[in-house]
Structure formats: structure tokens, C-alpha cells
Length: 291
Image (cartoon, rainbow, N blue to C red; front, side):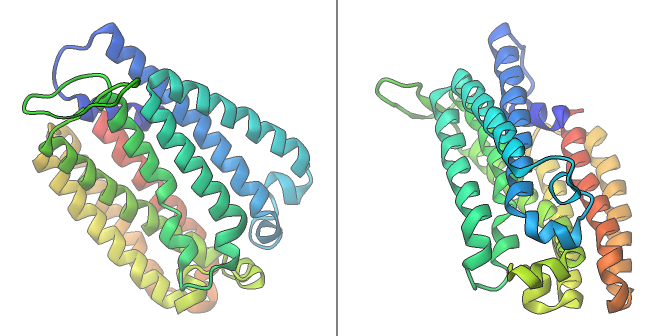
């Protein structure tokens, strides 16, 4: 995760000399995003405790290794660290975290269990990772000025400086993040099918069936790979990114395609494997951006 969190502000900063200020911004971004990751992970375990009793009985709460109350206090601690580190980056990064935390809290605690819109839960789940992309770009945009920049002047707080090209690059990376993350979320939703059905969570699998969810996941893997290649052409990324990325993409597509051919009775078990391979594809793609 460290390479992932560092890769985004580094991509936004581009190929130019690094000074102490930029290095500090990158380090604070890593700390903010890492603590935010742990906070989100624990909050999700707390809100999904009933689902995990069926789908993931070995997780900390359903297995009895830790109580919900103790996990709650740990989540508060990591949330506090996230707020502190984000504010140290910039006021606007702090605002990004506040908005994200509010949405994630409402989504995990209430919306994904009560909203009846088909696949609602998995449509919005990737937003938690999109925030990482937005945070990384905003961290740089509030630190440096670009040539031909668009400057948003903010009284009392840092100005936000970007350019049309950099804004477009952020949008491409956001779209890649959305499809790459959702592509692996859907097989995990297939794995969690029984628990989600019991609680009433609207995933692609519970809304459209496991077979259709596998097809949508495969399509999302394809789209994410195309977006990754577009990102290579639009940004400073080199063949050091492109070649291993394409190999990783094809490898993941192969396993995703196998999920399509799996018998429906076996899909819940195989979904966990594809979900893990898809998550590795997602994370390793950002590691390649760092390189």
C-alpha cells in the first residue's frame, strides 16, 4: 500500500526535481491514506459483522478474537490520525477526508442495507478508493503551480492550482480505479452471496444473479485494462509500467474468464479466489505507476 499511496502524488507531480516540501507532502499523504485504510477496514468489519458470520466467520469479530466495542475504539484512533495527517498536508485534503468519512460511514452503516436500488452497495464501494486518487492530486495541487495553470483562489486557505491536462489525467485514473476495484469487488460479492441475501444487501450478485455478476466483472476488468493503457499514453508513465501492466491484466482476465465457466453451485467458493487475484491486480497496478 505504501507504493500505491506514494504513486499518486508522484504521478501528479511529474518528472521534475524533488525538494524537501514535496517529499514531506508525499510522506504525509502515505501516513494519512494508510491510517485511513485501517480505519475504513475496521469500520467495514464492524458494520458487516452479521454478514461475516456467514461469509467470513474467521474475521476478528465473528470469530470472537475481538469485541465490536474494542474494534470501535481502534477505528476511532485511526480515524483521528487520518484527520490529523490530512490537515498537515493541506486544508483541502482535510475537507476531502471529511466528506469521504461522512459518506463511507452513512453508506456502510445504513445505505447499503436499506437502499433497494439494484447493486447499490457495489456501485458506490469503489468511491472509498477514488478518494485516495483525489487526495493525492489535491495534495500536489495545493503545493505547486503548473504551467498554464488554472488557479482557484481560496481566502484564508491554500490556493488550488491545476491544469486541463492534469485534471484529465486525474479523471482517467479515477475511472481506472473505479473499474479495477469494482471488477474484483463483484467476485467477492459472489462469495458473500448467502450472507448478503440474508441481510438484504444489494450487490450485483444478489440483484442480477451470480452468473451475470461474473460477466459484468469480466467486462470491468477489460475496461480497466484499456484505461490503464490510455493512462500510459496520457501521462509520464513509461514501458516500465506498460509491459508488466499488460501481462498482469491478461493474467487476471484469464482467471476472471474461468469464473464465467464455473458451475453456479461452485461460484461462491471460486469468487473468493478471483476477488483476491483482482485485488492484487488493482494494487500492483499502482505499484507499477510508482516504478
